[in-house]
Amino acid sequence: MGDTQMKKIMVLNGPNLNLLGTREPETYGNLTLPEIGAMVKDHAKRQDLDVDFRQTNHEGTLVDWIQEAADEASGIILNAAAYTHTSVAIRDAIAAINTPVIEVHLSNVYAREEFRHHSFVSDKAAGVICGFGATGYVLALDAFASMLRAKL
Ligand code: DQA
Image 1: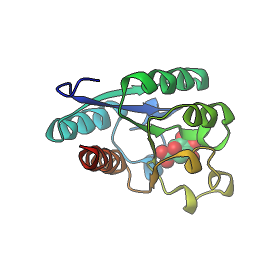
Image 2: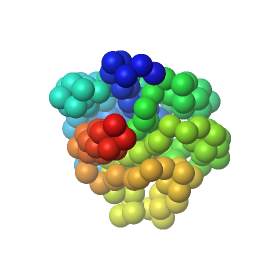
Image 3: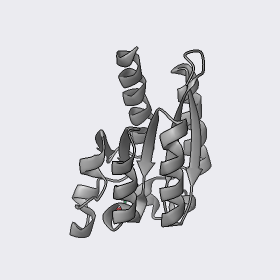
Image 4: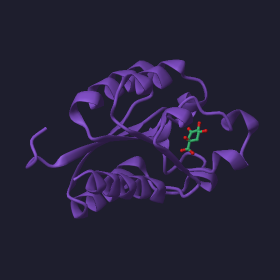
């Protein structure tokens, strides 16, 4: 990647996050995913970062995108949603690449059902942010911005 090129952060969202806005708003808030995407992109501009914001309901597509990010992105912000708690394939994809991953959850998964307390992603991630709603994505972006600045 050339020095003059804007660094890219991929923001990958997993299953059912396309329903944000109407999905359990007491747990996930009222913002829609496109609204969160716009907020993150707006914040990225101020950090001189380029954001590629995506959502899929399919586990294999998340694996494909993580592999794609290995070549194209300086960091991945990943809300794998329910696959966080089930997917060895997503864990293996993260382990296979050098691009750092920040795991994000809108809700505080540790204050919820026990099956949400285990993540296949966390110990392969650079860090985890959960419980701050949509702000978590912005916090993750700030974390990447300072990590990337520290590397300059
Ligand atoms: C989630 C938490 C997961 O446990 C859940 O399956 C989701 C969303 C969150 O953002 O809080 O779909 O990742």
